[in-house]
Amino acid sequence: MRMTNAFIKRNFLEMLRYPLSYVFGIGFPVVMIVLFNIIGKYADGMDGMFNAKTLIPGMMMFSFTFVMMLCSLLVASDRTSAFVIRLYTSPMKTVDFVLGYTVPFFVVGVAQEIACLAFGGLFALIFGGGFFTFGAALLLMLEMLPILLICICLGVFFGSVLNEKAAPGISSVLISAAGILGGAWMPLDTMGGFETFCRFLPFYPSVYIGRVITGASHSLPDTGAYKFDSVAALGIIPIAVFLIGFAALALFAFKRNMKSDKR
Image (cartoon, rainbow, N blue to C red; front, side, top):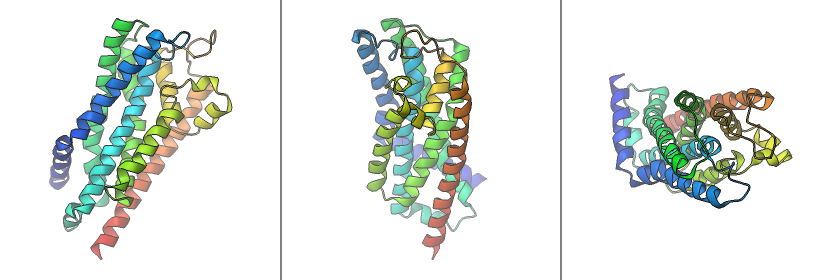
């Protein structure tokens, strides 16, 4: 356990040395919140899509994908430098290594949540549109943790199977896909069959349930607020399935590398 704690601390410090951790981890989501608040201020008929209640859950989910990219970069970099290979001689197991990467980036994800809520609240005061209660904010943070863990597991997986040049590129593709498929800034509830497809992935259900918590309104006029309906209830299933699946995939990929590198 002592070695695992030391590995967690090392990864956390190593992550803080990356300038990209600040730029993409905290800075970029905040810039996106500012940008979409400005767009919402001057977009006739679309201001509901870009107010805090609708925007913050989507921006939280989207910001977690940058955690995935940073995680994949660190894991791939450690493999390239043979740092992890030297640790294979220690008593640490596969779960310990994966946990050592998960905990630091989990902390970064929680920091992203706080930043999104803080700046979202600030710009809600500036641009209007209302905000949500402190209790709803805490519940939203808890509700978003599974998709955060999914993104971290994806980061460990990409870092385990790709080198440090390929991992960020593949992660960037998924970042863009998650933003679109999760409805972070697009009104998927107006897109019929495409929305139905997105329900089977973990990104959109996470955002949908988040908007139920914040009391956001649907994009179409006179459709009312998001409610914990069948879409939200069934959305728990893909979130759970993808979380278990990607966690298993990350463990499998890392363990396979351990066996091949020891030969």
